[in-house]
Image 1 (cartoon, rainbow, N blue to C red):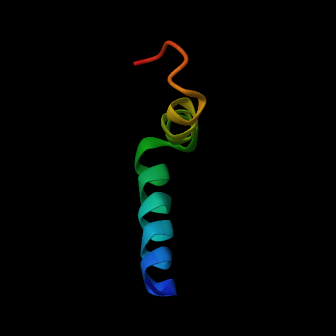
Image 2 (cartoon, rainbow, N blue to C red):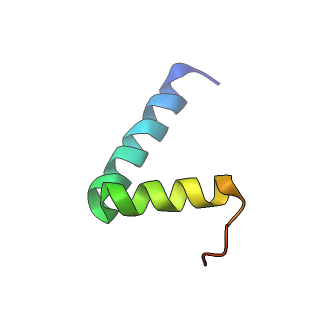
Length: 40
């Protein structure tokens, strides 16, 4: 596990945010962290 894997992960997240949109991505990430407070 080196820095390369983390860098690639961050790049993947950045692309996903650009593709989905930051608000949608934040919701998709934060809701599971909150325990899926009633949202699909």
